Image 1: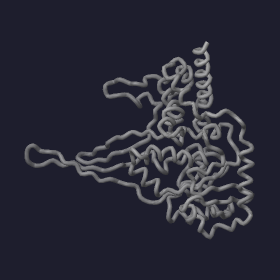
Image 2: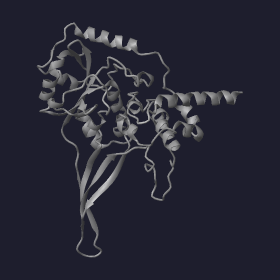
Image 3: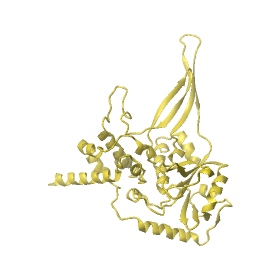
Image 4: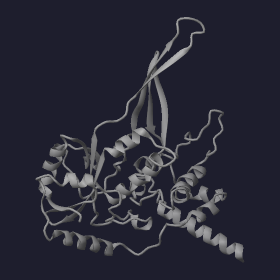
Length: 356
């Protein structure tokens, strides 16, 4: 049976302070006018009401990390061969992500298939993943830009969470979903949740009843593939895009990175940093050739990857969790939902035309 406890709202900060002795705690907090995930600091407070502008993906994939340090030496005799010493810098320490939304927790499983899959395993990612604990807050409302229900999720989805918090009056019912979650709920900060577990379940059902009945974006791989060569469609779709790449950095499922070596004399370090596929230089080759030279090419790849290529590789799971951050934070309010819906309509129209 799932362990359930009750956490008063006023006890959240003391509990996180208690956990900070063993974990690096990330929590949603105000930064100016914006809510972002940042290292927990009681002075910053916690914002449990608003969806953060940034996802919690940096807990597993930091924006910038050193993969290893190196030092080169040359033999003193001809032919003066070069030897390289490598010193990996695997991450250590436990991380707690508090207040992730259901879409954030699901997004981490999308990372897992790439960085911790059967064909490839990234030791830096897996070290962080194994040491990460995710405490998810079930949503009690949907923002206008949210569409998790259209991509296989829901506002109360517990997928990928170690603990699920359901908001009730004056606090939260915390339900442990894994052994890691059970450990967290051993804290004396929690109260018994006698009778409240059913109340939490009712609250989640009530939330689901508020989700509008709208079309799904699942199973549309072929629709997008049929538009692959229709560059006119993608050119029209991408017209408003500024190619700033904000959508990729704020997306909880985007995982592209760049690798650079920073050398200082005979030593240096290899660094991995976030990158974005909407940049014109992302696919620029050393020869000067660029297979995605225009916004249309890059928009086709971005939407195609999330709704067609990734699902084909990973059991029809979309690489989009419908958080809507790419919409609400886009400087021109580009709406990926409209782009996908137009793709569906265009593909349907093309099929009907072919059958005439």
